[in-house]
Length: 241
Length: 241
DNA sequence: AACTGTGAATCTATTCACAGCT
DNA sequence: AGCTGTGAATAGATTCACAGTT
Image (cartoon, rainbow over all chains, first blue to last red; front, side, top):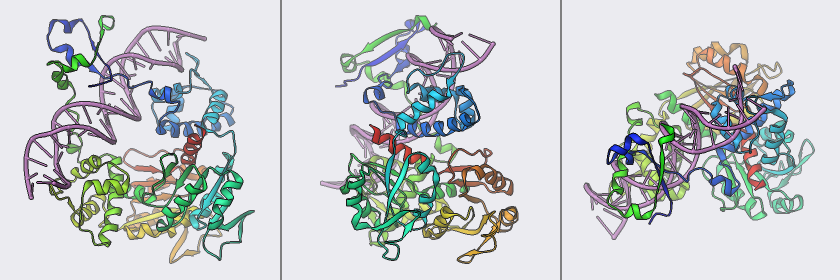
């Protein structure tokens, strides 16, 4: 019927009562699933990213040791949460002392895959594309836009910095040649699904989508959405309260 | 006390027994807290936003009735989740039939505060600012950028469409004059906290922040972050698996 | 004395499963 | 017959609290 064990915990005061023990039901088997899968939840990963940025900043300032509560305070989290997150990395901290900033940084980088270079294709050479292109944070992290695609013939053939804007028809060719695994979609919503399909069929395995509305991709492709309208509408809802 | 605890493992034989149903006693009193607070969780609100967009689209296509599973399929959610979300709005559906698209749309709009116009200030007239400014989805939803601020003297005094780019020093003045409650931050990270502080002290109550890294605001101000680097790093992590 | 690492507890979100309406 | 609305069940994420380490 049920294949999961349940653990029931009770202390001596409950032994007197018939039903009381049943009140302290604890469903276990919760923890320890990431361990087998070798993957942590997305939420934890995105905090890893925050931790990394923070740690790199304080490393610049000469800090080489940090405690969970300092990290928590800086990033508006709680200390236990920071410890729990970092414990996913293994036993890193030194009890009574804190964490070694350097070791943390290099571990986080390794886990996040930031030691290697990721060639990225950007689809959409509009304002948003330009903003993403000019955002230096990507390059600093190893994400390098190797080609830009659009279908506007006025843009095709021109360059941004030294990166050519190509016809979208050359997407597959480029993705294969440069071994691109990440695509960024910055086109209007009506074109988004089509672009996603092309990226997928070209062999891209991870997509960052900036166009509003849902697009769908096969299960083995990771899709990350950034939906600005939704964010604004959440604010609007807040202001209505 | 702690030492007296016993762990007992119940397997399926137990769950076949008469006592099993009693376990249920424990886990109640969970639901029904949002109702008093009159607010739903952020996650639900952001799905409201998705529902609304989808419903408006199908309304265009002449659909006036929709079921939870249709919505779920279109938005890659589950049917029970859609029903649960919509049930927060009250009893809207018709059993055996589905939901009236029109009524849903107008209720969602009301809840999300999209019946009124929201004047918005945009701080940062770079590429990202330009992308946000030119994104027509905002205006369609009642978010109107009434002023743009920057500190670059080359930009100050120029206009985008008919909206002037002003010196950041005139922020408070504008916010007060136009009753602005929402601010969008699209400046480099090193300037973000300072801009946030100015927005807050000018009276803005909700901030959409596009610059990477955490900024902090008082409790009564709603902050929504869009952190592109983190999204990309999550993809990178995925690709490492 | 100060901090980590982690079971257990709690809190939050999602899904199941079905009574009840049309 | 088909769908909603919702208690109950499950899953997931966060926090508490403290044993253990330096």
